[in-house]
Length: 304
Image (tube, rainbow, N blue to C red; front, side, top):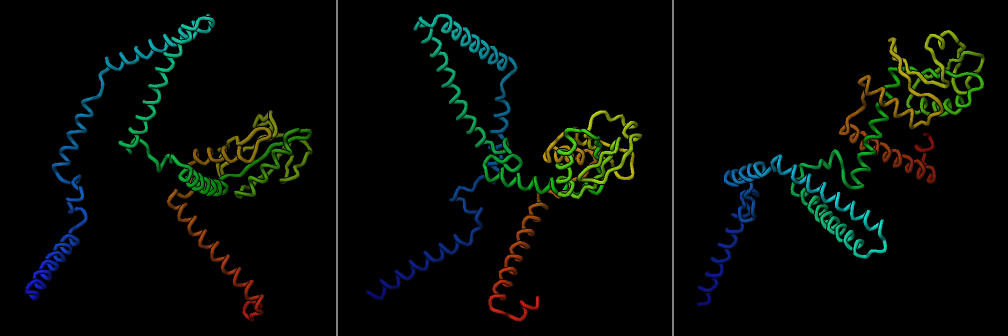
């Protein structure tokens, strides 16, 4: 009897194991008991029908015009009640009526705000959170990638144009501009030369005295920075007056866009970040190894 009972338990265990094995061998999307029915043709048809119903539920022009008229009427009543309360502040009833109207507006605003978020949630295609991230981490990452892209673009632009700063003696803004221009140029690799109509000399750039060029260009405001495209007659004003490095970067990026100069894509920039991070990590490891080697007095480190 005991032997038969053991056999029955063995058979039950074996059937359970076979059932579990068969279920595990199913493809993930074939496990209908988990609710993965969205890919079925029948479900597809239902979704398409729902989309058609949503499109057919689009309000008519007359309905939209009616809503506009009601909103304008509500806004007019609210404005008039406000004026009534202000004009007769001693009348509590006027104030109460205005506040009731205002409360109606605020209550509907709360409902609109909640449903606005719900509409975004149920329709994720409305907001592209990759192109326009909604959280601080996404915005920071996009900003870092954009800065890297801008830096690459400006470095490429520096190979295609040359900058000329026009200055003169007694210019109140020239020295400040040239200081910022020198920082900008050294950061991105721009070649810069200064031109003056007199004997004044820039503290930052090689200076030529050429009143003829200034007259031909009809420059009446100094300092002025002009970008000249290499081997062409094209020239663009990049700055006028005392501007900052950020101003110069913004104008130069506009020039790059106009000339069709562009740095790496965001994907390439991200790979660049990763490669740079790997290089920095390797340099830190090498530096640490050198320090440890010097402390231990290793021959190979000393030879370096």
